[in-house]
Length: 141
Image (cartoon, rainbow, N blue to C red; front, top):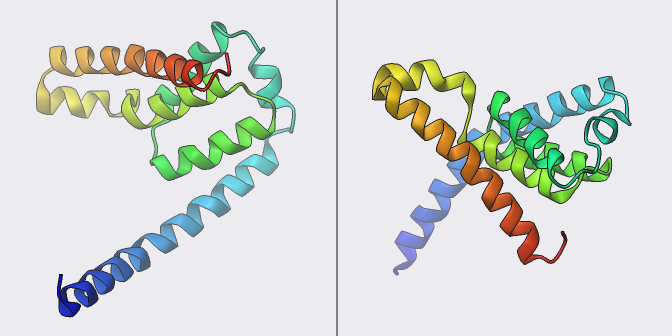
């Protein structure tokens, strides 16, 4: 790769970073406000520590709260700090990014109702399986 291509790639990366930076700062500030408004023990009380129920709760919470992956990682870190199990956090992050019940009506309009519902259900259960096997692989179950 020539010097000019490396310079061009660097400048493109820098431009992309400049576009994303305000959004990241906004997300971090918004999450900071939200996390201050929610009592510290809320998530640890919401998630009981049950290895079957917690991933389901995390998956449902993630499914109805669509957002960007960056936001889910920040929230997942906060969940872990409050004692929520890794499997519940993993299920939350996976469904946050891949399921999104919020966009189901738009997806149905563009791709058809049957496809949208099938994809959503498959993504939900696949997220639970991936969360389980991720934590199992790490020997944390």
